Image (cartoon, rainbow, N blue to C red):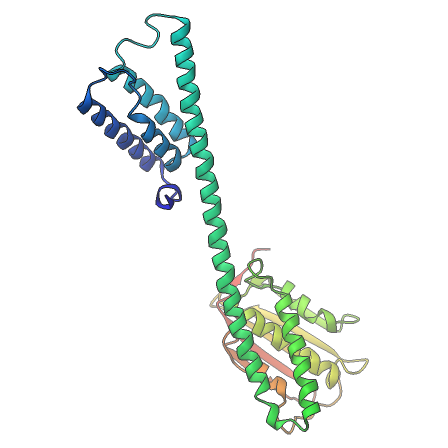
Length: 313
């Protein structure tokens, strides 16, 4: 039934279906009695139902008209209205009503089954996306938890780990399953840094573009980590510093370069050991290149993402 209902058929294919559905019942009836028993349309009813399910409404109605004329001409004896009478008129009206009702019911059923197929396909796509995101999150949580033995204390690990989990939850909330599988810049960046933005201290510039689905959460988590560190230790920790966040698409047309540059903050001291968030600021699936530099004048970070496409303004 799905193979009959779901395909979108071209006009040529639809006409071919009409020809076959006319040929088969015509041959069948001709091989039986050439209409001697009356009821010239009897072998065409199943074909009419098939046409209603397989073809668009206009082609199904075309089949009904052509099949009725063909059946009457070959197997119906004299023409419909050779002898006008009330009974003949009522029978004709009953035939038109029955044929039209068959086409209508078939068309409604066809539309319902096609909509169900679309819903099922969307549901399967959402399930695949959900499974993919869950695997990514579990991998990331595992990577964050692996830093536990290096923490100064259990409480220190717990606090840092809880902050990262909250950041991961916030990143996931920015991407609705099925609705925003691809991240659009600048909206994705703006939503990510919004909790840290005050008095226009995170200045963003860049061209609109669309990220591949697999880059969204890694980028959100990386930006969240940079913002968190800037608020705690860097340019956003005082009253005068700011961050310049810019991006552009390279000459290839599919490579995105993102630059995070902190300015006006306290003098930067390179950490003695990597923290739990350092695992978010390394090249990884979704962020093909990442360089983090603890310049004394201000932290800067450059990221490279492949597979983007420009977004028309």
